Image (cartoon, rainbow, N blue to C red; front, top):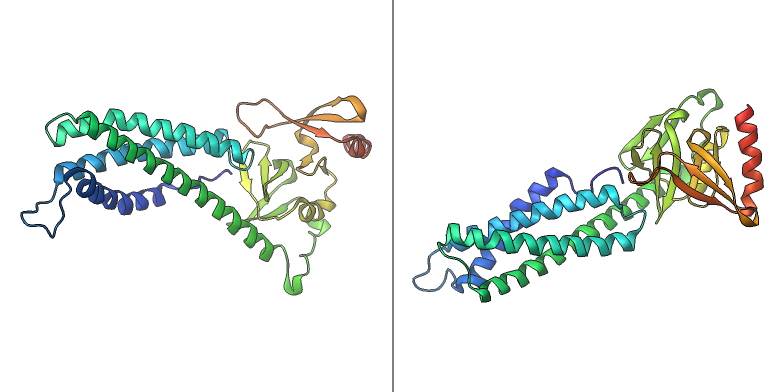
Length: 293
């Protein structure tokens, strides 16, 4: 998705709530094992600051990796691969960050280096927290997807459950795309293609930007685009514009491989899409007619 699943605003709000709570609990339960109701209790500021520093450092590294993976390997392209890579990368980064920051923080705030037993206990706790945080991030992303799907169900249908009217032919110079945050009005030339995966339909613009739409299926989208001859549904996942097609290659069994630009991933030059032999004939006719028109 073109938007980050966690914005800076919500990130700092979450830090302000969860970091002090976790630092308070860990400094009392893990380090000092003393509590406010006990006689002679004093607040363990050195350990509280140690845990808070470590958590903020690990949190920042995790968030940077979240955003990097959102760009290089979004959930909507390979969900299982993304989840596995996030758990491995973020878990490892969290552990390495802890092993570097925790001894330094312990030396600064407490005045001594941690023992091996304390380091091992802290690493175990930190790694567990990292798994929980990553799981919460994934769950939050999936909940947003469910919300988008529900929003789509209510916005794609008018009163009585009837579909909205198709755009008037007199207004073919602009296309209105429904998104979770309102309406996006674009010119046909700005659209490269639409990509569907996991119940989410993504608009890929010619400049490479990505926008999540509120359509539940490509069928509803193709009905809206029916008055525009420059679009064609080449598969169950792609509705493409003629301007996005860079090359077409003949394959065996009358299949075609269509090269689209821009690609979904920034690392790729083109997006390769296979057109089945059942669609290839119709696609060729559309391509020839559109190019000549």
